[in-house]
Length: 145
Image (cartoon, rainbow, N blue to C red; front, side):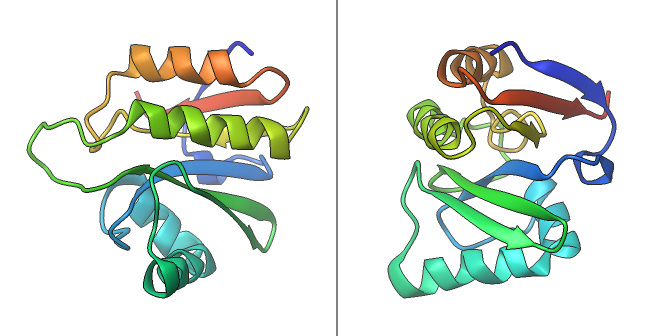
């Protein structure tokens, strides 16, 4: 499915399903994950619960119903940092997108440029993965630039 691009804040959009990348360390302290944490504290609470009870695994996908939408916590990187290292796993993104396709058949999912910010991934690679894995799900990527 070809990605549609929109300018603006994903969380200000009307889209019911929002996916974002998370690390496997139980931390949503920066980037879009921090934005999710502040706007949808229940999504963070459930993420932490998974982390403390069983740990988080690359490629894992958590669908958390929060008020008016479902936040999809996608575990796309093991660690995190602010040092221009690629932390995102392209295999994890592919796995997440396969799960999203199976779970949200025919729906629309909104996201930031997942994995291409603080996670250090190459957006062209990630874009190709998303377009390859999402056959019926309509992806909308929000950018601030």
